[in-house]
Image (cartoon, rainbow, N blue to C red; front, side):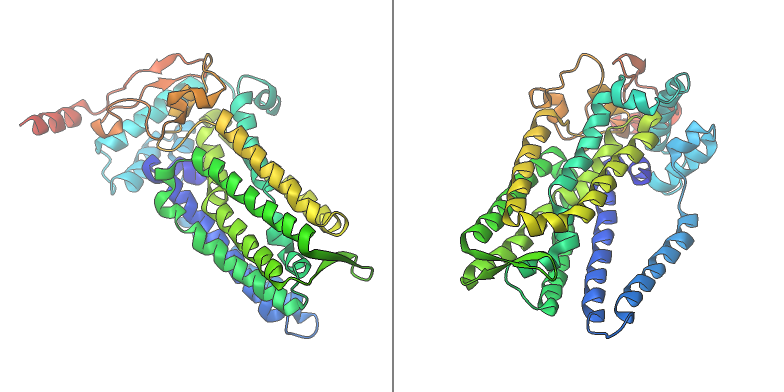
Length: 409
């Protein structure tokens, strides 16, 4: 949420994808620490990985005090002068008279001046009131990201590799470490291309790609694996007489991770804060994130049982869910790339069809309105009913006019 509020809209997706890249880099380090400590005898094998996590938490605690405050939050708290300086620092190298900075501030002020007269929606209103469409879409993004099965792969990849024929624990941990490498390599393109690719099509295509990968994993386990239930570990492994099938399963686990990394890994965290209005963003974003972790909590508890009891069928279930989410995103989820947070209010205003794929403005990447902020004008700001609140508020007219006359000459 913080990143979506402070980043320039042109690179908002890139900024948030950098965040996800570092998350994945941390996962990669954790995988290889786990592999390294697996060779230690005694409790240090698990105590050392747990203790090393303190390094990152301490670093975060120290550095967060040097981060600028959200300009939207500052305006909301009547600290407009501070908001102006933050916008200038982020967008114009400290120049508070920059037309873009002035126009961005004007747009924020215009929107929040309206929202001040309207109390923030309750949790009940978010789910069932006038904001329910964008609320359920935001929840849906986090729900579908979990339902791709990615955390089954992240949490229990060692068991999956053992099911696929890698019997030794060290071999499975090594394969798990390589999975972390794949996750990182395919997340990095998001830093450069997310704002060009948009949000909708990566989610649609990513779902199809992950679905195909899950299907192949499940089909090969069924066709070539002889299930063997280990009563001691309560796990079902597969005895593969076909080594090529075993290697193909492992390869498609990596392909699945690659599809996830280049699509849903970043988009699912970028998208919800982009579609929420200022008045609902704090509560709504917390609800969407809670949805993700709630599902992950239950997956962490019950997926090992599912892997033992239904084995290959589990991957077919995730295949169906991946295909289904691609259809849902295509039909109902509007494009948010290249749009200001305030512009999204227009796409969710009353009277607009929920069938997004039929709405050209809702599916187009980029700004909705002509001239944009580069000319020193705030975009048209709409309320939740689609009514114009403040149309093209011109700020610092002397600065803007000087620029315009200069261009004419």
